[in-house]
Length: 425
Image (cartoon, rainbow, N blue to C red; front, side, top):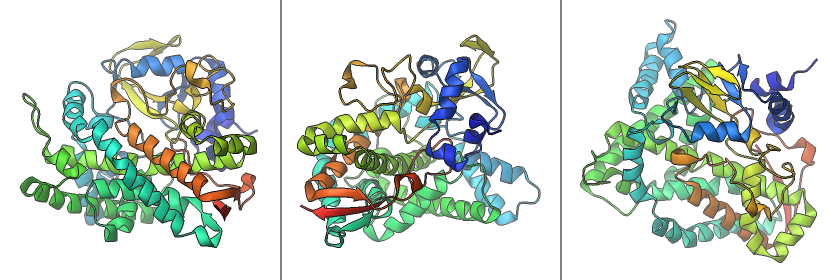
């Protein structure tokens, strides 16, 4: 007999598509559940997740990316006597650089110092100034397909918009954008999948090494010749009384900007489009009033969170939901479940654009680790979807909704391919 919880953490396709059956089952048990597959307690209730996120002194973020990500894979390769010398050297480099805990996987007081320094690069003024460029890019991407009357949303828009935006603000030239995407794919390839071939692992670390080489050189250039881009702002960030960022800290930050500024927004853009196209009444309402787009974006963030969960480690013996969690034990905070918790949200499985009176969703986290790039992701998605609606009279799916494929991961949630048909406005 099929076990939805086991299937979820084995990243079975049907559970990657719709993990919520497993989440309901886990929430019914209320208490945190030990998941052997990921060697962690899974927390699925909103209030338990928030309790952990609000107490960074009790719960370490050092393992934030989980057991399937690049760093644990690097550790495994270095320890394996059968690993070849070239791959071992690349894996060791990853371990050396990732030894510097940064932002997503840093604890206080290190996190507070880094956040203060890098906040200078994410000011409201800087984000607001991005909107004309994002709108121009969205129109250019649609220009490339508008006369065809059809497009593949993911590869022809959802990947290209956030990838180009983050590449541009990091000062990466246009001719390197395909390489930039390959680097991004490499850093997320292992997250939540747990099943990578030897060839895929080798390719992943080749790409990781290229990324480090390129940005090590760019960091030195920005030190000598700053420009008006995000990389220069990070390299030259200074606050009285705070030590400047080290090179390894900067490289780690760039990895996080690369992934957070690319993969998650790609999934969000595509999920919003899919939601509109599978809910005709909602789509009609949004077309009639584009001011609803931001509200739809927030509900899709809640219902289809691109990041389904994140890891923490107990710094001390703690009790959560009646279960004693020993010091040093890993926790998996299941955002995707907390965002549909019946105790936190009315009618949690429905998209309700007037949900403003309820508590905030967890898609961007909470507390001092709240996602630094959330305003950019919201901007890109709002502008991207609005531009599609303005440029078309009608959009329909060019695929049966039941045939839509999802990423094979328990930690990432996103559509792999979404063919569209449309009538230009």
